[in-house]
Length: 159
Image (cartoon, rainbow, N blue to C red):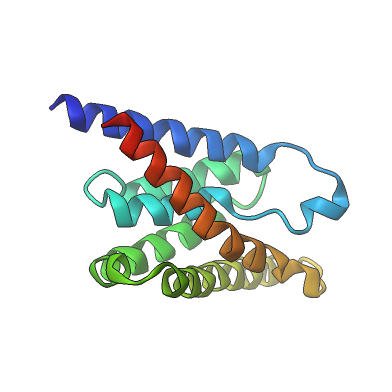
Protein backbone atom coordinates (compact mmCIF):
# COMPACT_ATOMS: atom_id res chain seq x y z
CA UNK A 1 0.00 0.00 0.00
CA UNK A 2 2.74 2.47 0.96
CA UNK A 3 4.79 1.50 -2.11
CA UNK A 4 1.82 2.24 -4.35
CA UNK A 5 1.33 5.62 -2.72
CA UNK A 6 5.04 6.50 -3.12
CA UNK A 7 4.82 5.39 -6.76
CA UNK A 8 1.78 7.54 -7.43
CA UNK A 9 3.46 10.51 -5.77
CA UNK A 10 6.56 10.03 -7.97
CA UNK A 11 4.39 9.81 -11.08
CA UNK A 12 2.37 12.89 -10.14
CA UNK A 13 5.43 14.97 -9.24
CA UNK A 14 7.26 14.06 -12.45
CA UNK A 15 4.21 14.86 -14.61
CA UNK A 16 3.64 18.20 -12.85
CA UNK A 17 7.31 19.11 -13.28
CA UNK A 18 7.15 18.21 -16.99
CA UNK A 19 3.97 20.27 -17.35
CA UNK A 20 5.67 23.27 -15.78
CA UNK A 21 8.77 22.82 -17.96
CA UNK A 22 6.51 22.80 -21.04
CA UNK A 23 5.50 26.40 -20.40
CA UNK A 24 8.87 27.81 -19.31
CA UNK A 25 9.81 30.50 -21.83
CA UNK A 26 12.90 29.74 -23.89
CA UNK A 27 14.73 31.71 -26.56
CA UNK A 28 13.05 31.29 -29.95
CA UNK A 29 16.03 29.43 -31.44
CA UNK A 30 15.91 26.79 -28.68
CA UNK A 31 12.12 26.76 -28.35
CA UNK A 32 11.73 25.40 -31.88
CA UNK A 33 13.51 22.19 -30.83
CA UNK A 34 11.93 21.85 -27.36
CA UNK A 35 11.34 18.15 -26.69
CA UNK A 36 7.89 16.97 -25.61
CA UNK A 37 8.93 16.02 -22.09
CA UNK A 38 5.37 15.57 -20.82
CA UNK A 39 4.60 13.17 -23.64
CA UNK A 40 7.84 11.28 -23.03
CA UNK A 41 7.00 10.91 -19.35
CA UNK A 42 3.51 9.70 -20.19
CA UNK A 43 5.04 7.08 -22.46
CA UNK A 44 7.60 6.14 -19.81
CA UNK A 45 5.02 5.78 -17.04
CA UNK A 46 2.65 3.92 -19.38
CA UNK A 47 5.43 1.39 -19.89
CA UNK A 48 6.75 1.29 -16.32
CA UNK A 49 3.56 1.71 -14.28
CA UNK A 50 0.54 1.07 -16.52
CA UNK A 51 -1.67 0.58 -13.46
CA UNK A 52 -0.96 4.18 -12.38
CA UNK A 53 -0.85 6.02 -15.70
CA UNK A 54 -3.61 5.20 -18.11
CA UNK A 55 -5.85 6.92 -20.57
CA UNK A 56 -7.43 9.16 -17.92
CA UNK A 57 -4.02 10.48 -16.87
CA UNK A 58 -3.13 11.18 -20.50
CA UNK A 59 -6.40 13.02 -21.04
CA UNK A 60 -5.94 15.13 -17.88
CA UNK A 61 -2.32 16.00 -18.77
CA UNK A 62 -3.41 16.96 -22.27
CA UNK A 63 -6.19 19.20 -20.99
CA UNK A 64 -3.81 20.83 -18.52
CA UNK A 65 -1.32 21.48 -21.33
CA UNK A 66 -4.10 22.92 -23.49
CA UNK A 67 -5.13 25.30 -20.73
CA UNK A 68 -1.59 26.38 -19.90
CA UNK A 69 -0.56 26.92 -23.52
CA UNK A 70 -3.85 28.51 -24.54
CA UNK A 71 -4.48 26.12 -27.42
CA UNK A 72 -7.77 24.66 -28.53
CA UNK A 73 -9.18 22.73 -25.56
CA UNK A 74 -8.81 19.05 -26.28
CA UNK A 75 -6.13 19.35 -28.96
CA UNK A 76 -3.26 17.96 -26.90
CA UNK A 77 -5.65 15.86 -24.84
CA UNK A 78 -6.78 13.96 -27.93
CA UNK A 79 -3.21 13.49 -29.13
CA UNK A 80 -2.02 12.35 -25.68
CA UNK A 81 -4.96 9.97 -25.46
CA UNK A 82 -4.10 8.36 -28.80
CA UNK A 83 -0.42 7.96 -27.87
CA UNK A 84 -1.31 6.56 -24.43
CA UNK A 85 -3.68 4.06 -26.05
CA UNK A 86 -1.04 2.85 -28.51
CA UNK A 87 1.55 2.68 -25.73
CA UNK A 88 -0.77 0.65 -23.50
CA UNK A 89 -1.67 -1.61 -26.39
CA UNK A 90 1.99 -2.47 -27.08
CA UNK A 91 3.49 -1.96 -23.62
CA UNK A 92 4.32 -5.62 -23.00
CA UNK A 93 6.27 -5.76 -26.25
CA UNK A 94 7.90 -2.35 -25.88
CA UNK A 95 9.21 -3.15 -22.41
CA UNK A 96 11.20 -6.04 -23.88
CA UNK A 97 12.74 -3.94 -26.64
CA UNK A 98 16.36 -2.87 -26.28
CA UNK A 99 16.76 0.87 -25.77
CA UNK A 100 17.52 1.63 -29.43
CA UNK A 101 14.29 -0.06 -30.55
CA UNK A 102 12.37 1.75 -27.84
CA UNK A 103 13.88 4.98 -29.13
CA UNK A 104 12.67 4.21 -32.64
CA UNK A 105 9.20 3.41 -31.31
CA UNK A 106 9.16 6.64 -29.29
CA UNK A 107 10.26 8.51 -32.41
CA UNK A 108 7.24 7.05 -34.24
CA UNK A 109 4.86 7.85 -31.37
CA UNK A 110 6.06 11.45 -31.09
CA UNK A 111 5.81 11.81 -34.88
CA UNK A 112 2.20 10.59 -34.72
CA UNK A 113 1.52 13.07 -31.91
CA UNK A 114 3.10 15.92 -33.84
CA UNK A 115 1.22 14.95 -36.99
CA UNK A 116 -2.12 14.91 -35.16
CA UNK A 117 -1.45 18.33 -33.62
CA UNK A 118 -0.40 19.56 -37.08
CA UNK A 119 -3.69 18.33 -38.61
CA UNK A 120 -5.76 19.92 -35.84
CA UNK A 121 -3.88 23.20 -36.35
CA UNK A 122 -4.66 22.92 -40.06
CA UNK A 123 -8.36 22.48 -39.34
CA UNK A 124 -8.22 25.60 -37.18
CA UNK A 125 -6.78 27.53 -40.12
CA UNK A 126 -3.38 28.28 -38.64
CA UNK A 127 -0.48 28.92 -40.97
CA UNK A 128 1.44 25.83 -42.01
CA UNK A 129 4.81 25.82 -40.20
CA UNK A 130 8.11 25.07 -41.82
CA UNK A 131 10.23 21.95 -41.40
CA UNK A 132 11.42 23.17 -37.99
CA UNK A 133 7.99 22.14 -36.73
CA UNK A 134 9.26 18.55 -36.74
CA UNK A 135 12.47 19.23 -34.74
CA UNK A 136 10.83 18.27 -31.40
CA UNK A 137 10.29 14.77 -32.79
CA UNK A 138 14.04 14.34 -33.20
CA UNK A 139 14.98 15.96 -29.90
CA UNK A 140 12.37 13.94 -28.03
CA UNK A 141 13.68 10.69 -29.50
CA UNK A 142 17.25 11.68 -28.62
CA UNK A 143 16.16 12.50 -25.07
CA UNK A 144 14.39 9.15 -24.56
CA UNK A 145 17.47 7.04 -23.54
CA UNK A 146 18.56 9.73 -21.07
CA UNK A 147 15.07 10.00 -19.62
CA UNK A 148 14.79 6.23 -19.20
CA UNK A 149 18.19 6.06 -17.50
CA UNK A 150 17.37 8.95 -15.15
CA UNK A 151 13.91 7.66 -14.23
CA UNK A 152 15.12 4.09 -13.71
CA UNK A 153 17.96 5.33 -11.51
CA UNK A 154 15.51 7.45 -9.52
CA UNK A 155 13.29 4.41 -9.09
CA UNK A 156 16.15 2.18 -7.93
CA UNK A 157 17.36 4.70 -5.37
CA UNK A 158 13.86 4.95 -3.89
CA UNK A 159 13.78 1.17 -3.21
